[in-house]
Length: 228
Ligand code: CA
Image (tube, rainbow, N blue to C red; front, side, top):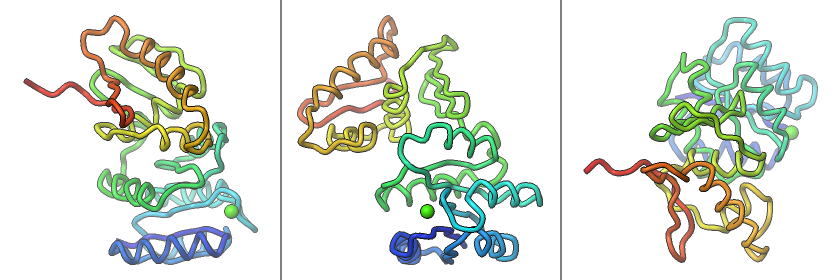
């Protein structure tokens, strides 16, 4: 599998390239948008990892050019924290997923593998996360359970997105704090507990199957009930 990384920050780019190599991928690195576009057009890549803020052509322009020329390889784009409009714009332009900086390499690798497994033509559906009857639409910023709309704040949406992406995994409060609130572990974790309580009220209250669970002393997990 061949992956193109378009990233102007040399340290990040090189770190990604090496990591992907070690994970068994062939990875090339372009340091600006026009080199990235040129390589993407001619290099037969299975996936492009595309930074948004790039010199010459930005990530949007590169993505739009690729799609305009009929190139449908999956694109994972890298975006700054809290740029919700950016994420929506990227998905509208035909990106397959996004990752918010800073991210861990493990998280990037997990996303890369998921996208490659999903393959091409995932289409719009790949913008919808599903666990049991709970659906989160990344593009429309809409959540439903059993077809019924659930209204969430931006933070609650981010929290639920994280839980759904990592379904079945117990997420420690420190990870939730850093991913959703940009706080470190020392920060007041009460904020997380309060938000989690509200989210659970909205998602699970009145439902016979509770999707979000507290794992004492460890964190939170979202998972569909095990089949009996
Ligand atoms: Ca950049």
